[in-house]
Image (cartoon, rainbow, N blue to C red; front, top):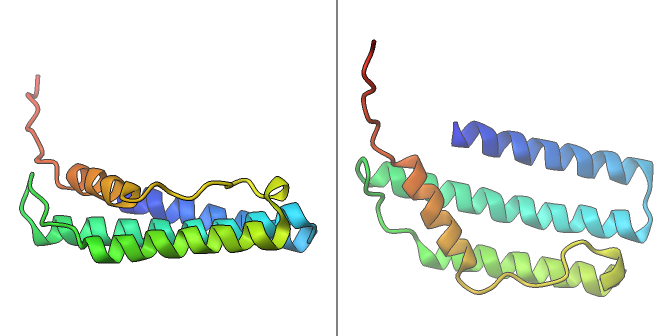
Length: 125
C-alpha cells in the first residue's frame, strides 16, 4: 500500500510539474518544477531504501538503513533546492530552507518500521 501511495504521489507531482511547465515558464513555475524534481528524487531514494531495509530484515524488525545513500540523497536535494533558489530567487520558490541533516534518515526509518509491521489477526464475529 505504501509503495502504491508513494508511486501515485510521485506520478501526480511529475504530472503537475510537467503541466505547469507547459502552461507557463515564469520564475515561480520554473523554480517549482526544479524543486519538485529534487523532491521526487529524494522521495524515491527514501522509499527505495526503506523498502530494501524492510525486505532485508524480518517482520517487525527492518535491517539497518544505508545512511550513506540517504545522506547523499539529502545532500543532492539540498544542492538542487539551493541551485533553484539561486537561479530563480527565493521569493519565487516554495522550498526556501535546506533539510536538517539526518532528517531523511529519520523519515526512512519511520517508513521502514511501518512497512515491517507484523500483522495482528483480528477476531471474526
